[in-house]
Length: 494
Length: 70
Image (cartoon, chains in turn purple, yellow):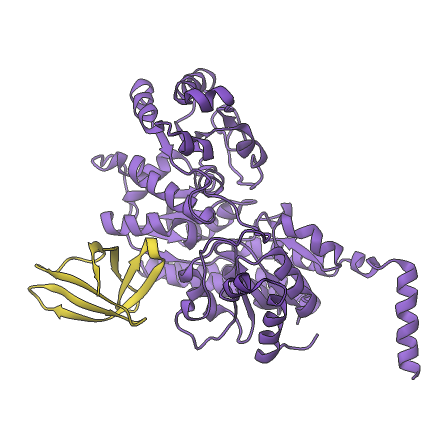
């Protein structure tokens, strides 16, 4: 399909909205917009972070998913108890592919599921005693854990359990941090509030533990990676670049991260923030309390990597600035070869994205490096400040959709006809059955890493593998295919 | 009375951030911005205005302050 003009896109949005009842139409209209780079503030054109409409298929998660699944979960040497019924923890177990180094069940616990498995009697009589007992059991069975976090599920808030009291008591008893996190699923409109709650609990229960302790020998080049969850090894391929340019990475938040790394973060000189949406809160707090500046960066695709490395280096002396240039130079041949190989195969292809909180804008640069164009993007749980940052990245007259519903997304795809869609597992099979190549952009479709120069090579290969897969030619059944071919021949003949 | 975090942006302007409201805007003008005190009515680039009793001596940014909506 040819380029959509502003009017076409406008008409498309109106057409899609037509199916809703009056009230719902009015509400959904606010979440769909056409990008206009002139607009400085996104709230003039799009509304975000609002409650999803009942009755539509949303793709959002809950506050528990934001806290246990995203922020706390990847911290490998702590045990995260899914406090409540068993399902929430079990069905989200190990799904996010946060890689880590360690022996699972001995000194690392990320892919394990710890739960208090609430039963009727716990709802009726309260679950604090059970929680108390679980923490004791954990101490006996897994003595090498460095701490425990209690991730509340919905019933905990509903029945009014006092997990803070249990946490305080157990902290004293075992002399290890026990962190209560009030991330009941019903809080907020999406997982975004879970991120905020998790950040606040880290701030209140973890971050200040080594404030009066100067035993940690710091250097002027200490940084921390914030908001990189090491999906498929992302944080590792980012870390190597930073270390190569002469920085010392003290902490990884929270992919492959540890409790002591988190406690040491206030000693660093600069916080490097990758996922702005989920960890800007703690970065802002550290800036205020400890005077540590933070800088957003983007390690998807060589253009953005070079830009980010220079931006990070600008906060340090000439040694690091030279280091950044050296790193860019060193990988130049490598990434140019990747582009030379894949760009001809991917040039001009159009992509639609719908992901979580940073990728809808962060991966645009990587696609552009491969000559592809992003024609639509949207956030599950982004806020206005995310859209502020997105407007500049996207081309004019492209589609932007906030908390898109299953119906809208399908209709957009039918009309815009992108060559590739990047979204999550819930969308994957719908679009594959429609015959559209699809990549999961949450979990990298069981591949990765995609960050850094090493990741870019894998990214390019994966996109090519999906887009140019011969299976897409065989998606139509043979008897229908014959009919279309005949019709085409007739058309040509006439 | 929102709690507002004020910090300096890369471009040197003050940014006005209210976490609960998802408001991230830059400050256009401050009524009183002298060596002795800082505050008064504050105009943001989205047109909204907030008020704080002038703080003396001027706060060191970044900091969190309580503002009133005008």
